[in-house]
Image (cartoon, rainbow, N blue to C red; front, side, top):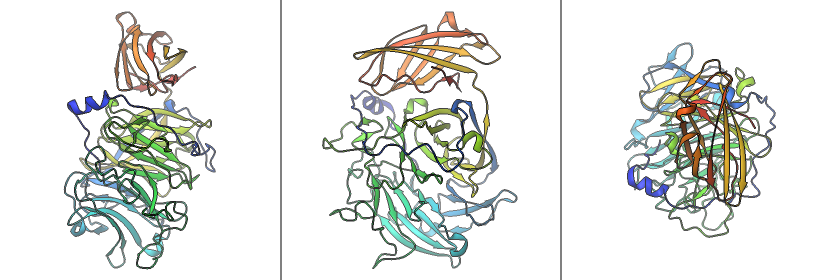
Length: 509
């Protein structure tokens, strides 16, 4: 499951450490925005995500998957080792679909039954795949479960005894028919085993294997085009490396690209977007956390790393990114088609990301999930559900278009290592704003020196700008201006998103 966040003086010391930016891989540009599916054109700040609870009584649920067998069911894993069944007409079944509690080590907060995947032939084979930490020593384990005879077959295991956190646990079949599996870096803090950059261990990796057959003594096969098949000393199962705790990843069914939510150490949470077929990439940990060089890392110069497409600071109230899915359902296709939706275990913020067609990504905060969401899943038709850890509920996700009640126009003047940013905030709603707080992130390397027409606070890259006494009220249709002077280390881009009193604002110029 998830990891605890550093707190107190240790976190403050890390945040004050001087770090350097991550060099992005030149040959791993984001996949194109065009897909074979319908992509919405509604601006992200005009979206609103809400949830409706449809079931309760789950015991620490961890993952959701839907069989494509015409039954409209959802399968939900519980940390202790059971899989429950939900149907929209009959609710949550009292009898588990399966129970492997006798095999599962659920000691500690992050151990247990963590992931589930259904093969393309599930309706016929009645096989499913489970990721869990196994008794007696917490080894991270991949197994096949045969429903017809209630048989559990261990396929692959990675020792993980010293720490009980950072187990990863996502399972998903890719568009190539192979099974992908994530494992965290082995736990502790700061990657004590240096697992992220090592190729002789499965820790800190995403694996890719063929579970449809066996090869030699193995109950699975390693695809011949896996990137490290011919690398001496490397585990051939590895597909991607340099990950900290990739708790949840998914594939976009339209273009086959992979989206990864990788939980951060204490400064940055990150989302990675990997073009289809791009095995062998190094995502940076523990040389880098997010876009910055990780404090205390000792990595050789000149190596190539793949940068995340989105990062956010825990000062937004977050603590652990919960990677989600690109929406490809039918009900809300005109609103969120082609949009990646993720959340955070602590802040419950709903993040919306969408390729902008120019190599970048639009981004917005579009609502809140229930508290402590552990997983986002989809039905066979692509509609979204989430489960939350405590008190253990299942929630259906809905989307709507709500025009923002604010707009922010930005004017940047840059020189050398400095820049000024003037912001014009317009009340586009129908009621006055009486007292306001504007929140927004700064680009990497920007540090505010002074401000005007506001009371501004910077924590990490998160800015909180509160009203001054003379501009506390913004009448409908009226605007106020504020701004700041900042140092920069090369990136002079303006803030990419804003919230006014918690509501997402449209972005003007």
